[in-house]
Length: 221
Image (cartoon, rainbow, N blue to C red; front, side, top):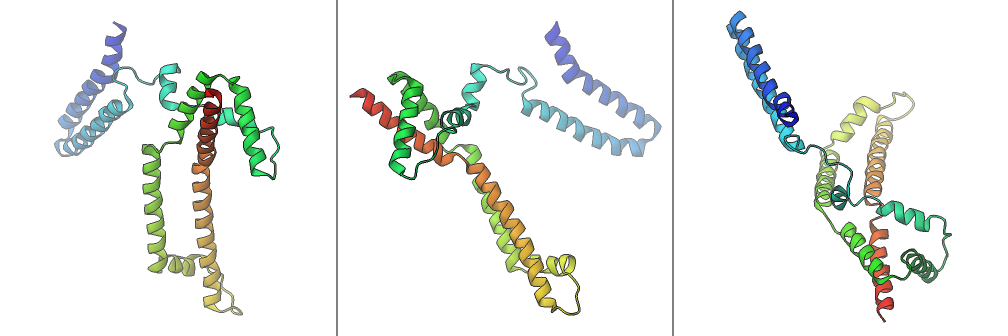
């Protein structure tokens, strides 16, 4: 019964209310009613598509469970932060690698099964997924638009009309040049920060996978 009422409120009731509203408006004014009818049909379509996409027809949002975690794989960065954040960095690369190796061995207690499981986890985390592909596509489009805006003079025109500081003692080209440089700097800074934030930890996880491989091989001997 509870599932029926849930289905009724989400699926049937919006449809009934929409039909009633359209009929009432249509009876009062035919012309305006037709305009509103088209709008409501589109809004209703958006509503049902949203329900379908968000998965609200049946299970809705997945509860916090091992089932949902197996897809999200949360906690990998937190584990590495807890494991290595209190360790000081050495100037020698080999020493840093050896200390990372020792910390992982200590975490797993030299247990081969735990090492293999941890390696499998970080191997999946390091692989490129659909989000990475989409991000790279957006990145490529952004760079293309930026280059196009510079080559076409759009950014220069914007700088000359909106950001140029009017001063009779300074040449117009000089003032526009500084405004242009300001815009490019802000865009590039945002661009670099965005990339760094997204790819932060990628190399770390790949290196952890390699260290785990070494741990596994040494434990198998």
